[in-house]
Image (cartoon, rainbow, N blue to C red; front, side, top):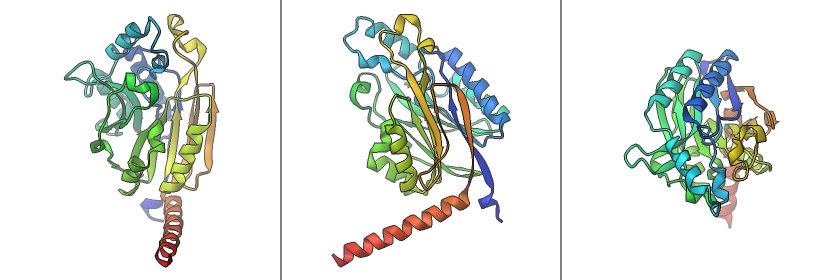
Length: 292
């Protein structure tokens, strides 16, 4: 069997950040990366804006605390590159695993614009690239800047072609198509976490549509993880992390309401079979369209 069909290990890291504390969250992320590496992981995926937590406070724009919390959020943003990204790269190298982690990225030029960004970090200890969320939705528009299509790129890794999207980008057709058209094989799906199953529905559909493995990493924020002074603004998140095969079936998880690292074995042979099956259905659909 060729190297292209060797087994590799995927991991979804579900843990609470140290909310609105960039340095402490980065330190915790590095510890978790080490734990994932010890499990023999080839890729470890964290949730959306894991450093330093999802901006759920934007749900309550009328609160008198909103301005101060937003300022605190921005000041704890992650510039790229920065000491925080350097620390994450060192952790990935020491652990021998690739990492995809969501950060609230602060623009280093303006110092005020902030983005929901996925960082792609190689086991070599280098920053492979980043993806800024294209279109913030609903109350997120009060916080995030808009990304652009230039970051919809795949990264060739020893186990396959890696890509990723944030949250409701999985409901947008064209961003997914842009990745699938490049030959996506392993996908990092980063979510803030929640009390519903919509992220699982969209993630499983995306796995089937792309014939790729999907690591669905959800954010976790329990009552005890929220600073006391912010509990009236920030709602808990229950994680709902899992790992999904190219056929849309859950192969690990879902994990709810607790910290943990889910792992699952993967193999590009499964991707190849699923991709061939998908193309056969497309061929039939194209034939029907021509007959019509």
